[in-house]
Structures are given as structure tokens and as C-alpha cells.
Length: 113
Length: 113
Image (cartoon, rainbow over all chains, first blue to last red; front, top):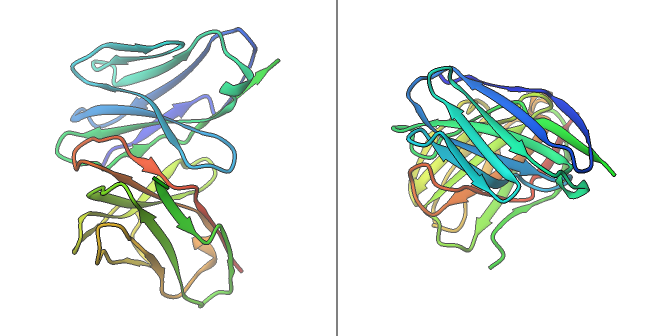
């Protein structure tokens, strides 16, 4: 089955700096890659996703890049703010797997004011 | 809309006890699923349903049962709780059945002694 690895497990940045979280996946048939943000005591919330026919997608301060050949994708957050502090999860899904997602282990991002 | 709701928020069980975790959504979503979240392991799919009367196993189904008699509700049953089932449980739903945005509930924290 699919295996998703996520690094780093914790990341501390200064407010205004950029943060990058990286994920690798094992199943070359995976073609959908969402990113979820989980705030303390809450359920995960989708922040951005990318499909395998696109190499990069951007939404304001958040961007995701995908390298299908290397089987890795990354989340980039620019101009970080204290409210960006949360746990971030990457996930992957195969085209014939319906809504089934395989999640990475999560990254705890701390943005210091 | 209340979105995805889960009850209870927190539960303590003794080994061997049974209980049902409740999940409901008011968005008329066809797809519903249950995940467990353990430290460093991300979220792992337990069971899912693509519509009323249809359920299937995910990655870690052992020790759990589900049923879906209505579109709105998707309860998760632990028949004989074990300490290994200590975890945070999340219910999620999505409108479509294929790589759609999943909306998560606030979670149920379960401690099995």
C-alpha cells in the first residue's frame, strides 16, 4: 500500500520567515495530494491540495509543489504569522481509491512572534 | 449548518467495555469515514461508507464495527475495548466519492485503562 513520510516533525520559525514542509510518497499511482492544518483541540482542515497534472499551486501565502518523478511534494508558507502555528499533515490518494487518504505523520509548526 | 459533530468529546473505558462513538453531519454528504490519530502516526482510516447501507474497511479496522442506516449518521462501535485503542478518533465526511475535500469533526478522545 501507499506510504507517506513527512519531515520535519517539528519546525520553529520566526514571524515573517518562510516555512517548508516536505513529504514523500511510495505509490506512483497516487495523483491527489491534500494538505490539512490542525489547530489544538480541533479536527484537521483542508488548506490546499494539488493533483498530479499540476506542478505548483498557490493560494495567497501558501503554495504546494509536486515532483512526480521524485515522488515528493512540499508545502511552502511565506510571511509566517503566529496564527499559522498548528500541526500540518500531508496526504496522498490514488485515482482508483475514491476518497481514501494515506496521511503523513504530521509537522508541528511554531511561529515565534 | 453544524457541519460534522461528534459525541462524546472525551471518554474513559475499562478494558473489555463496549461503547459507541457518535458522528453526524448535516451537509447531505454521501461519504463518511472514521480515522484514529496517534502521536507521530498521522491519521489512519478505520472504516468508511460511500452511502447509506454501504460500509467498507480501511487500514486499521480490527476491533471496530460500523453501520450506516441513514445519510446523516455513522456510528463507530468498540465491542471490547483494549488499551491499544486509546487514541483520538475523528469522523469526516465529503460530498462526493472521489478525491473530494473531507470535513472533519472535532474529535473524541478515548482512554482505555
